[in-house]
Structure formats: structure tokens, C-alpha cells
Amino acid sequence: MKQGKVFGVLLILIGLLIILGNLDVIDIGFWQITGTYWPLLLIAAGFYNIITNPAGRIGGFIVLGIGVLFQLNNLDQLDIFENISIWPVILILIGIGLLFRGRDNAQALERNKINSISIFSGRNSRVISQDFMGGSSISIFGGSELDFRSAGTREKEIRFDAFVLFGGDDIYVPENWNVDISGLPIFGGWDDNTSKKDFDPEMPTLAIKCLILFGGIDVSN
Image (cartoon, rainbow, N blue to C red; front, side, top):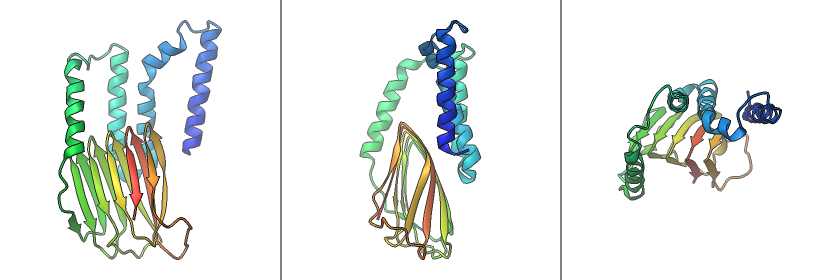
């Protein structure tokens, strides 16, 4: 299912709930429904990533799990906020760490596929393989810097799956590569700042499939 259809179904469901509430068919207000069942958005996003991103299913399962925990909490089936007072402090410390973390020298990788995982940290990798075939990146409260500018490939299309949750990825590509970014952004997005804007069928295409929640991906040369 394309992401446009996913949002279409979501809007239909929200509209039906509002109508049923206005007709007193269900005895609950729209905002009460939203406050109680908003974690279903995370659950839906998790399922979406699991189905559409074979190489990025770990991120999908993480989002799905978080959504389930929040939903159980809202339904009074689980209390995950007993010590909520320390959560903002943890988030602030993580944010400061991400802003002022030092930049390590990029690790040169000759592997044909790269799978980068950054959780509460950062990773800096430079791919030098001349038979690059893609890979995946997972950034949770962290970020990855992925440099493909020294890479070569025999493929026409290179698939790269990315999952970002409260973090960000910087991806650098050769100037002659095509870039095609698609996915599902929720309170986040991506920027294609590459100099090459016209599609060249003779050149390789880096196809980035992503799920972004409260974060971003920046692609440049």
C-alpha cells in the first residue's frame, strides 16, 4: 500500500469517528479519542516499515513496540510513566550529547553492503567498495554520517533503507549518482541537496527508503 493510501485510510477513520461522536453513536469526544488512541499512529508506522522495508524491519519492530507500550499505558493496562519526572532530564542530556559530540575519523569500509546502527551515539563511515550494493541504517537518539563518495557500483539501482527516531543521518553521494528518496515522515523529513537534479538513466541510482519519526535525513555531495 502506498503511503498516500495509508494517510487516506487514516483520514477516513478519523472522519468517521468525528461523525459518530457528533451523532452520539459513540459516547466519547474526538479529542478524547485522539488522546487515548494516538499511539495507533506509531503502531501503523511500525507495520508500514516492516512491510515495505525488508532491510529495515528492526526499526519497524522498535516503533511498533513503542506504540504498543504507549497504547497499553493509555488504556490503563500498563504504567510506564511511574517515574516520568526523570524523562525530560534524560532527553535534555541526550540532546546536549548529540549537539556537542566530537566527530571521529570516518571508518573506511570495503564491504559491499553496510548496516549502520547508532543508538544514543553517532557513527561515521566511509564506503570505498567498488561493488557497493546498498544496506541500511538505524539511528535512535543518535545519528550516522555515511560517505559513499568514494564508492563504485555495478548496479543500476542501489537500495538503502533508513530508520530515524529522534535523530538524523547525513548521507554523501557521488555527484554523478541519481538519488531517489521515498518513505514515511512523521514530524520529520528529508532534504535532497545534491547538485544533480536531472535523472540520468546511464548512471547508478541510490534509492533511499525511509521511516522518519522526529528526525531527518540530509543527502548531499
